[in-house]
Image 1 (tube, rainbow over the protein chains, first blue to last red):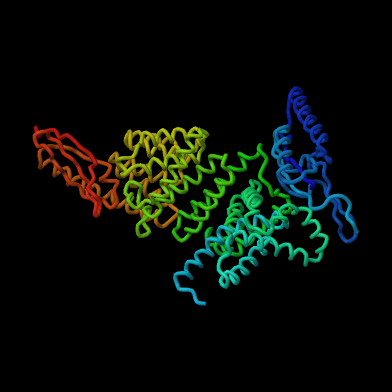
Image 2: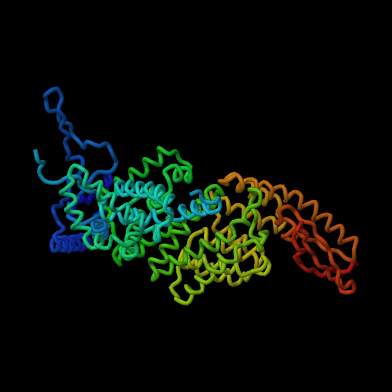
Length: 123
Length: 484
């Protein structure tokens, strides 16, 4: 049993292929809600969320004891993480199975990445 | 006691056979028990070292592969016991490995779980979450027991680069928890496709270079194992048949390092046992009626295997099989191969049109340009043919292919002079004819052509190709118009 990060990325300026009409939006939300209910029922869902764009990000650095803030994302890239799920799965095959369902629901590629450790660090 | 030389050689061969046969099985079983690939590899190495000492002294045990599996497993468990977390781990192991531990004393009792282990290992090594070159490397290393050096040499990379590949692949398996089991029914078709393509890739890597024959024999051995372990998957059998039918022809595909075309291969040197086995598998597949890309490719090879000569090939059957194959595998390469077969029935003009339709998709594929060159040459468009062969030579990967294409270009130039002298011969004889028969341009080296006039009154001429050490072959009959 392990936890996996299922993340989706969007291109700068693109709204991650999100539905444009209210009808499409309704159908999109319904597909995602159904999927999340299925995740809940099987004890898969740990956490999930959609993020604001990189223009809402702030980077914090320590510089000679001072906290220095910069506007914008840490990684200079055309693509930025847009949303994610953290799921609980037996193994990669199971995680990939869920990833496939997420792809079908949101019509967007998903990166699956295993957690090396989760929860609170034991001192 | 000193063994006679013959017996010693036999036992070295036997050990090699056992090694190939037992390595993957042993690694597969130990990975299940200890859950760690590297530990399993080490334990199996140790078991072989122990075997080389003991078997030299006592001879082969009744079930050598079983002996290796059992010894490696015991060593891996010992290694675990000795380790820092020894006791705790050992208790977990006993809990995990419970049932198979009970059967440890006799080798045959292992066969059930061991077979499943081999499948687990094949599917793990060929997991689509690993990149293809990593799948190939893992499969050869863990299932084939090839040394790091052998695997590296097979794929023309340095040992350190190959070591990195393997470390990275093993890291991903562990970190991402790629499972050690046969995939669920729903995932099976996709996962099996990956396994089959890895094995076929290994086989084909072995075809490019005679020094890498070990890749072909390993691919065939693994395909055989897979076909036995998955009797309900006709594509696994199809892949085995395809490899066997191809392997039967390997000794005739080259002569002195040079390419020999199918039409020029000495069919008496094809391996009849492999052809027979391959054809029997193809027939069994046809009866099951669940065809797929590998079965269809094997069926095409089976038809070639049936023909005593290139001319006797059942081309309509081959084209029909390519039509099927195009339905399940609509790739430009399949379309190209179909066009080449079509040329044998409908002639070069039709084939050329078909090739031109896909030429843009295959612009960097040397065999497309070579096939175009062949058709153009047969149509007498020598300059275009020469350009196509030159482009093919530019793109060719192996030296043998480049040499072959160079000879084709040369043959085009020679063909011109031969065709004109032939035309002269016709004029001086009983009639006038022009000739641009494919065999004159196609054959390599350019053969001599002999005319036979069976009945002078009927103005019929038979053209026979004469190639050294081969029976004379009839290449065509033409009726000659009498001189005005």
